[in-house]
Image (cartoon, rainbow, N blue to C red; front, side, top):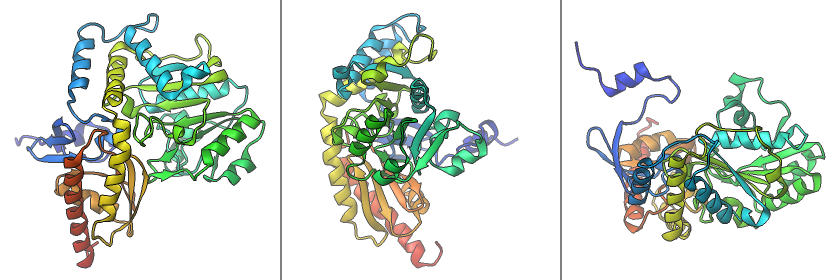
Length: 400
């Protein structure tokens, strides 16, 4: 009998949801990871915008050890110091503390959006507006407001009353009315190919939702925690939302989600109207608070803004006919390609020790840790250039 490989084990043990993994990773340090065969990769995907501090950061490791040594979990019949500390930090960083804000903790981004959708029902209305080509999660409620038909259709009927709009102020103005419960938007559509909302959209959305008494819910799951060069994407527009949803980067690798509410929206939910067994547990909140504290202490929001500009220039300076441009803000960037070969670029990059992601056939998504420096930027440029040359050679040979 031959010994099975990890690929065989994965294929026989795991649901066929994600496809065959690209590698089996066993450890990480900083912006680098190593696979089971000892190969090292520069990771510019960072767990899909999750690992804000990279891998095995001392602040993350110490926070896990310290909190696990005291309390890892208690029920929500009780409070813990880390829970309240993280809530206070989020209220301050979002500005919700100046608007009577409150926080709900869950375990993921999709759970945060589920909470926001339940919040919208408490307005007494059921009509929800969302954007085409958006992504808000895989659970049935969050999927209902995800603007990708291919993801929704196998699971329909979903939540009724949802309408999808083009990302224009004109489309929103035409659709909104006094029967709308909420508008839910991402400042940058990461899963759609790193597509920022048009200039002025969020300001107009705030004015229109206020006029019609609808909630403005901003999905900051991928754009939050400094990723865009602001603490949260909506802050670049100088608006105050009714609720934002968070996950990914706030935990730096620890599973956690949150909904932060502002103003009157903070008073909509009452006792027993929502809950979560693990949401707000002391281990997750202690780690998230430590991660956000380190982002503050090391001014990684500013670093994300400056390194994002550097990365954009590195990509645009490459001598490659495949590069059409760069979209996004901070360290949420999409490299637009001139041909639909993003999957081939991802494969070639992996072969050159670089992890990136194909957001769609014509876009490579870059979401590295927020603390990358000169060395990582230079290393990325060299490896990405090699990946593009590899794909260009295949195209020239007529095999792509």
